[in-house]
Image (cartoon, rainbow, N blue to C red; front, side, top):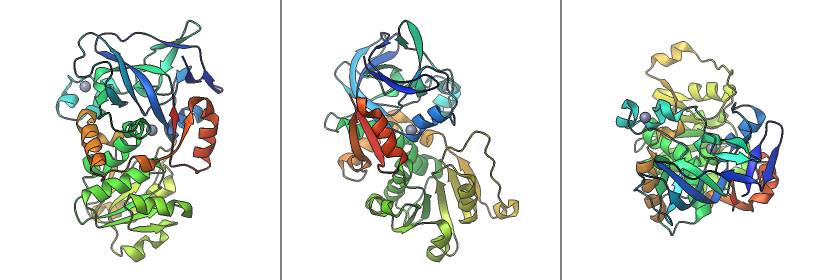
Length: 349
Ligand SMILES: [Zn+2]
Ligand SMILES: [Zn+2]
């Protein structure tokens, strides 16, 4: 079968990939569509260290092809969106509703694929850039069949991460002010999460003025090319500032823009050794800096909520998909993403 493999040096679209049958508690999914996210490229440029060879891709949707022993919540033919969270479901963190903190769900990459008899790693417990992949049952979330697959594919990373950061981690409340730095795939989902939460002012910041129209469509009330104008709009600062780029100077700006009791939520992926600084005295006014893994999501609860909001017209998914590409055009999709020509490019199988 076809898939996108990174061998440590180059990325290749191959057609000689194989995947094993689902074991107990696992689901075999035929991928229909998969979004290309910066994290896939972060594996290639080393920002996210990962063993190779590896099948890339971590946000996808498809059709259940087979289920292993003990899987009862989905059946062959069901449409599913895939999460990257291979949490165990039985530890104390899972039990208290924090599956993103499950120690089973971090690290420990599996090798369900082979190529020429050699094992190939699975990225983010997912590897959606393959015609078929095997995931843990907990990662396959049934979705209504009327949701277009390219749109559903984006739920598993961009939507869970961005909307989840607003609703689950920051817990933005009605009437609050929100600044979103960076309006790529994650930033747009933060913007619409803030709109769904009822934020009264949503200021989008992006150096690329071409992003304004989309940012406003998702719910931004204001658009700025840099954070410099934020104080004109919010003289006492913002209740929530989301950094969605991963640059330390923007992290500092996020902290400096906080109102009393404000919180900076760090979503961008900075290099592993990057350090940021802030004025210690500024934190005295009940300010917080929050990390956030994967939108602090609970996928089996959050994905049905998001698909329902989509059907009500409150959560935009179709508008996130700028372009679809057959998987063979992977390189073109990467070029468009790196040039900022697409919010999200989606590969189809
Ligand atoms: Zn991603
Ligand atoms: Zn667990």
